[in-house]
Each structure stands twice: as structure tokens, then as C-alpha cells.
Image 1: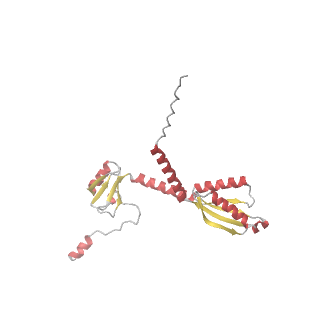
Image 2: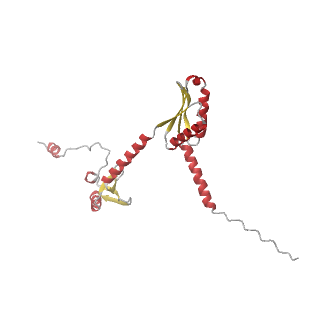
Length: 224
């Protein structure tokens, strides 16, 4: 057997890292040196891998490779089990919120009374403030469908009342015996309003309390 063949047989097989999105931790880290960050986020400088592992083990924590492409890789000391649990909880909460935000629907009649109109429109506002889109439907009966202008007037009134909170995403259109309009939350308008409110608050705070005007002096007494 030649020396080259013997060297190939003695060389350990190369194994590919498992295809996973999880970072390398502890003894799975391959770098010789790492840039170490402690559990409080403080930079500890460049350490050899054995030294970094020793520091993490002394704190009963894990060494986690958080930036493998850096030179040298950045590793952070943390409780990796707790980190994974917190990340899973955040992802679950994010999915729950995404599922809860959808399209709500509010139905009106062409000859709706003012009280019912105000009640339904307040509900539309509440949906928009919660981040939902709202499908507003005006339902026609019988020959009412030939007077679609009545439905359009109602939808125009609703659009005016929710201005600053919602914006018309889909203009009013006839859909069979219904007239439909979709309103979406107006995040820009709400942010602008919040910014204006903050500026007003800051300006009032800088101006300070107003000093009351001094009372005028009493009139001089005149002898008789």
C-alpha cells in the first residue's frame, strides 16, 4: 500500500453539519477563537474557544454562536433553553395576533335611522382602531336596488366619519343586491395624529405654567 493510500484511509470522514436554522452551541462550535459577549451584552473581547467555554460553564450557561460569518465568529453566553422557549412564545403570540386580525363586516340598510347609523359606525371605528379591515355593506330590498345613490350616500357618510382612523381601500361597488365598500386602518394618519399630540405635549411642558397677571393696585384714597 502506498503512503498516499494509507494517508487517505487514516483521514477521518468529513461530515456535513445538519441542515438546521439553530445556531451552534458549546462543543459544536468549530472556530478556534471567538469574539465573546457575556449574558449582559458586554463585550469581553477575543477569546480562545476553550477559554470562552470555560467562562460559560463557570456561570452554568451555554456558549452560543450568534454571528458565525463574522471574523472571528461572535459567541454569546446565555441560557439557550430559556432563549428558545422565549422565542417560541413570541412566535406563537405573533401568529395569534395575525390570525385575529381579519376582515370584519358591518351591514346597513338604505333607510337606516340616525341612531342605528351612529351605533354601527362607532363599531366600525372600533374595528379599525383594533387593526381590522371592515367590509361595509348596504343591503337593498326589492326595488331599492334601483336607487343605489341612497347606498352610496350612506357609504360616503361612513367614509367621512372614519377619516383619520380608516381609509377607503375598495371604493363602493354594486354586488348583486348589495353595495360594498372596504375600509382599512389608516396607520399613517394615526401616527401623524400621535406625533402632533406629542409635539403639543412637549411644547406645553417647555412653556411651563403661566404666571397669573398681577392684580392692579388699589385706587388712592382722596381726602374730602
